[in-house]
Length: 342
Image (cartoon, rainbow, N blue to C red):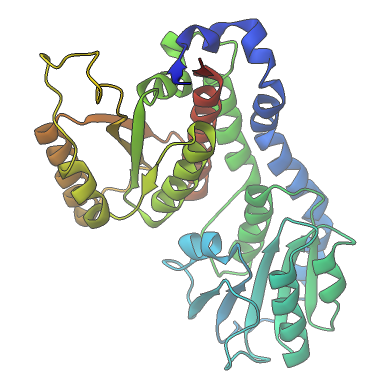
């Protein structure tokens, strides 16, 4: 039994109905960000009113979702910043430090463990989580601020937390309305009702129909988006999809077998997935990013590897991250829809 890609399914109403739930979830991303911001507005205002005037000694992002906060805050935070994705906290963490936690899932033992330890040590704590969840139950403490967000959406939780930290002077601007607007723009551009000729997600899905994608993002946030998008491609197709730094992806591209127009399409190896380089461009234009992008694209041209680019269209760093992530997830949904088993 083999698998082939039927691109006509991407504009077929009956076929689209089979993934309607997934597409509706993606289309509602902007609304979830706005709702999370609204739900937490009162708690954020109260926390800001009672916040200490002095800055913390250090900021510790604890729990499994700490890497997203690190990607945004590390270049900006005016005090030392540490991401601690495992259970517990660094041994030196204490009452002069601020511990922040994203906990979109109702049951998150690692985040709950980190929070319990932070409360025990007397740390200042800010946690974005669902009220009544395991994490909320472990967050009770004199120096704890709970931002109630009734959503399991990681990005929505992150936007609320980042906006709060920005108001404390600990991070860049991250306005919920701007991020939600970027997500809404993706939902319109990648709508199932938009013809594949003008739909960037459908066009990318077609480009990856018989491919093993190699996904690269130059900035810290684009690299984070690349890992999440590659994960979505793997789940959608059941094939390999890699994301990593340029030096890790170059050998994969250079090992790709060049295509020959005289190859027999019915040969035994003709159906082998080809390598496609997917570049996630969030507008970062420093010298290192330009150099790495140039090396990857040059290697792809030498080996006849196709290059597909997604260029984010949003004002803020977090908005561009959201744009890239959402477009990649739409492409994965259409890739899943188009693949048909014989």
